Image (cartoon, rainbow, N blue to C red; front, top):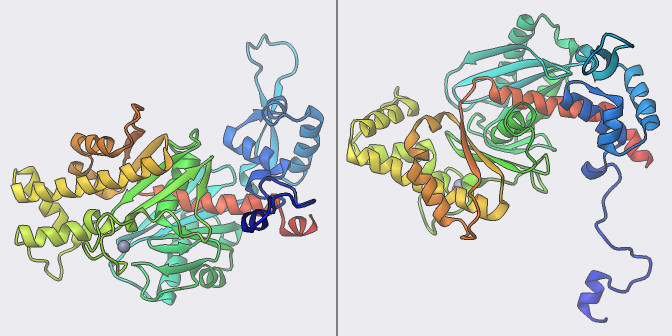
Length: 426
Ligand SMILES: [Zn+2]
């Protein structure tokens, strides 16, 4: 074969190889000791023989690798009663994560309140804290100071000095480049392109990893919630904006530059309503709270007073709808139809097993009424298959902070078990 295609595809080239070129120690080829550690942490406790079976490796390899993990203080042995214990023989020995080996904090900054948790290396909750705040965007220095204050309160509650923490996971709403640690835009920050991770890390004297809030909820579901046993699922968050986190093959998907899955800014109307991002026709401009408020002000002649929060206006709109006000009902119904449109696009693109709807707005049950779900199904490809399960999850105060803690736990254990010098040495 000759011509441009052959050149581009290196067809027939000698020694070029074929198949995906996967870098050493990437997500798909994680070192065995890391896979063992992850499996022990996920199981709670597990026997060596079971690890060998699950990883298709020899019991001798498991013994060697787990000895190293025990020696380094990451795992410990635990005596377990044998199944159908007859009272004879030695008790069986299983492995578990040494919970006190490391502690991390997860912090979520938002417009209304900041929340935080401390968890140990096994993921057990040590303490949680919530502080209310005045809404509005802050300067970088202010937000870092607020983070430090919250962290100090949290450490006091947990009875742990800050130096005992190994890392912080920090979440903010908006466009966040997770690997670079940069917030390109957030409603809680005045400036754009803010190097939040580096600034917070300098101030707190600890490694800081940041992500957007939708990814944090998704991590919380993946590590602690309904997504633990699922390989492919979506979490759609609806509050001030519309966000989505997506798990593919048990791992969160962020896109090539950490900016993917912006469901709220997928276009549902050409030249449509103006969105916060500056473009027109975004899903968010029809579903998020500011969209509902904009319509409520017009339809119900509700005036947005300076001291009246968006939340209070929405509550008023919801009360009108419940009381049978036709205009208020139409507003929720229309938003629900747009949500159905967005969800059907997610299903047609990714075919998830489960979609979790999360966020305070999900209390407004008009948004996910039966008719909304029926509408979603009508817009899905008609192949006779079942629609994915849709669950609405209550808004736990500390859910997002738990997701931030999962981010920190992941970074700490990956950093310890796969140090950069080993990658460089490959
Ligand atoms: Zn937009």
